[in-house]
Length: 326
Image 1: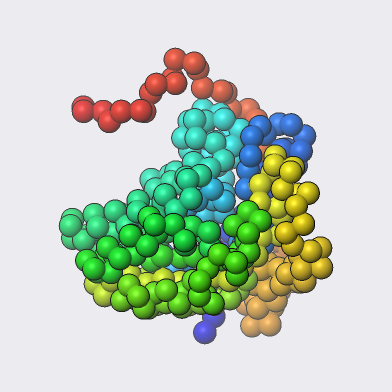
Image 2: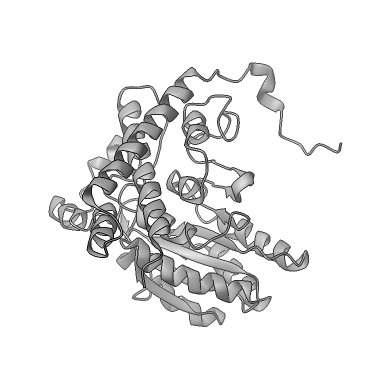
């Protein structure tokens, strides 16, 4: 069953915001305006949006190095996200975190990290906090197929299951850990097949279909909120761009063919969601175009805002490093 019309429209809006945000990031990186690596989320938008549509504002999320899409999907301010990428003071982390460290506690975004699988125990800790404090929020963590092989991931799933913590472990299986196919690094057919070993349900879902992701994650969220413990959701998706901007050597490694990429791009998540809205009489062509145009304008405004934001002062370097006892 499709979500109601406003929810479907909002999901499409957020998918468009992520796509145009990432296209802008690629443009300004190519122009030399954005320094350092950035990891485009293009092709995976349905995962973040479908999952976050199943969450409340107070629910927590944590992400990884490829995490521009997660905060936007959760409702984070795109101006703050763009300013952070450009190292400006109005960014989520006052310009000190950059592309791989976006956090906005006001909408439950605990942050991201470039250390593979390092956000998994953080999200598990948030789930423990919910249980200890007897709060109703759940915690969801996004991680990749490469991270699924890390010890921190397995330790977290074991602890969450043992203590029945309200955590959703969401694997974004985009099929490559940089240049290594998951088929050469994961010992089972699907990452979700590992769930029974930890006493939790595991589901593999089409990660290009935001509605399908939303349905599966909604079930996992309801289970977690009811006190029944964690779930492992594996979303089969595909990144359309290279692993990272600024790492040109990776582009020279023939780890996937042009034909494979072209075939994957035929299942663009934005096209799939738009088609579902049109087929279900949820939106007209004109309404879809209006959503897209508004999203483009919002990202353009975000870039202008970021460009006009000042850089932090040097003396601010050591601020926010320690807890304020006051």
